[in-house]
Length: 371
Ligand code: NAD
Image 1 (tube, rainbow, N blue to C red):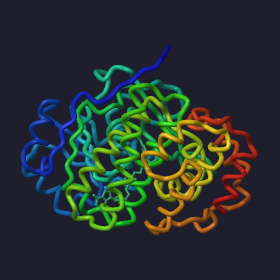
Image 2 (image 1 turned 90 degrees about the horizontal axis):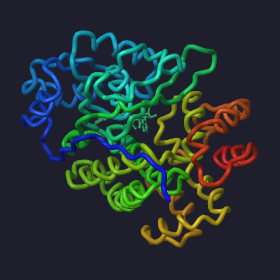
Image 3 (image 1 turned 60 degrees about the vertical axis):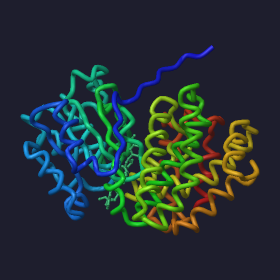
Image 4 (image 1 turned 135 degrees about the vertical axis):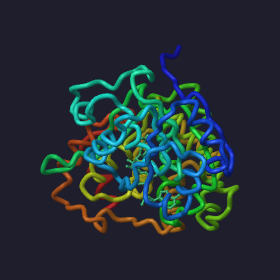
């Protein structure tokens, strides 16, 4: 017997060139007459923003969302959404998450502090159209936004979530991600891979998320090396967009695991890219979980063509292949932060979904293994 919820965006349109050939404009007009277009500087630099606006002149632009966004970035975007009736999000996970906050009716601080609950009804917020330019966080497929709260002395990274934050329409256009530099391709691709693995072995996995997560892991293993080597390959970019979208659909309700439980407090303190941290933490977390003899890792190993006991080494090799830093000590973290990081990890929803129960010493062992 199963008890679960599964939700996805209402419509997905996949096609190279859709951003600028009129298809994005047509979809946007189904959601509203006065959209706020939220994007990062890279969309302007690549020349793509001008091409999009040529087809969508009614859009009001909110440009310049930084990586690893703060609540302040969200509040600024919320103010920009005033007078708009829909939100178009075009960017990496940071842009997509800020756009989700911009669509909400109440103050983002109140949602983050638990004073307000994100509405479950999509009708209670501005409708969102999401186009990822990285592959990726899968944020275009989730009802989650991840933000850093910089109000206190120690920054805190956490998520807010709810039905109204789920995009109504998603467009996957590989021409938007060809401009990703290799390190962004590697970090965001590893984020997608870790999400697929954690969603598959999660305690919250269900019969809908299982095939999505597994196929995503296999496709990323096949196509991420190609996208990293040849960023201009539209085929590799599109396969990665589809795979990370599948991983996003899976994690949205399956939840994640210990890698994400640790990555958030470490990310808040270092500002390091989320995907980099996920990649670096994956091998020791696999080793920890394999200690509980979990069958699900065998399914992953078979598909990846690696012996089950070599999965961690497989993930470790990618760190070298993609030039991903291996040591937390190189990222500005202090050993004196360990106790606070461990405390935050143990109460995280991701850690609670980890297939093996996690104790304080287990988190410390993972941090030491990456030090
Ligand atoms: P990002 O959005 O932070 O972008 C990283 C860098 O790449 C930025 O400098 C950006 O300008 C640049 N960039 C993005 N697309 C580009 C392109 N096509 N060409 C050139 N440069 C480009 O990176 P990300 O990995 O996509 O997102 C990370 C964020 O997403 C983190 O804050 C993470 O916590 C969050 N996240 C959210 C979810 C969710 O479900 N909401 C899931 C996972 C991660």
